[in-house]
Image (cartoon, rainbow, N blue to C red; front, side, top):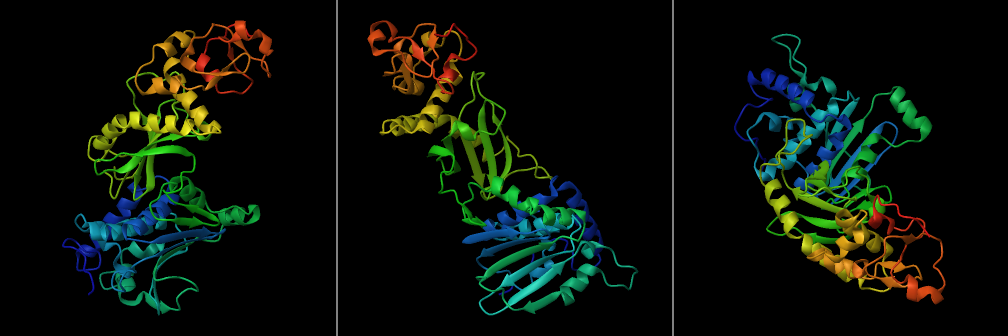
Length: 428
């Protein structure tokens, strides 16, 4: 059965066609500040449409996005833009609207064309969208490009070799200086780098060259705790060395269909004294955004619920890190993360006194032997320390243990440096 667009103004029908086409062009001006982000909307479309696997590849002038799943019908291929002027779609058609938005935004880069191809087991059907597809007809009797596309634009082709049933989106850039630069430098198109950065936690496996992105892969996350409460997302402790944000607060990534829409810093009740190695990942099939998809509303579900849940599961997250640090040998990334968490609260001249007064989840970390005294013996941060430190590359002689067991050893480059913060007592 062929699915028909929901009620509302249709770009392919009657006199409303011209006004709707103008509205879609206007929408393109507001959507996606970064035009190359069309590929992210297309990847979201794949996930929302029930894709089981996704592949992205590109060269100097081409970008191909392919996914396995249910292909669109031949009737739907040339009528994608109907979705952009129809009422809010049902969940079943949200993927089609995302695909339409992707194609519309991609055309804003003035490419040679964007092919949308539906692949079945026996045949592939292609519709070619070009930047002039929404132009008004030359006269009252002339046929608009969009109407021509609906009546004549479909073409049956051989299924691409090895392509499973599903969908393919192919953007071809026009020959120009930009394409020549990509070719001469051997650089990949910007869509590839953008997708690699934005799809680390995608829920459907995405292959980009030899790299596979999948939420099941921890990557730079050391431990994760689901948000629960019927929310899609998690709170994670990350490897401090992987931190890219300049803000010391908790990194918050907001995604739709597993593809990041926005990255920001979560406001806290305290001023962190050191960078907090925690990441809050919030995902949903659909997020409340502005027209340009550059900002997500914080005052609506699921954002309000997810942020509240993120605060609630912090103790569980820290306990998971404590359990990880109990394993031998100690994971040095986990040790660095633990020191970063503690430093965010106690760093400064009076760090030792503050550490001894810690309560709650952080106390369990402060009681672990995460640092060493001047002799090299592992000891807890909360053990009580003198105000000066040993900063040599090697520990002092063990014969000095009776006098040096409460002197902190900070070898060059050791994350124990974070604990002392801005204090700079005399070094030994």
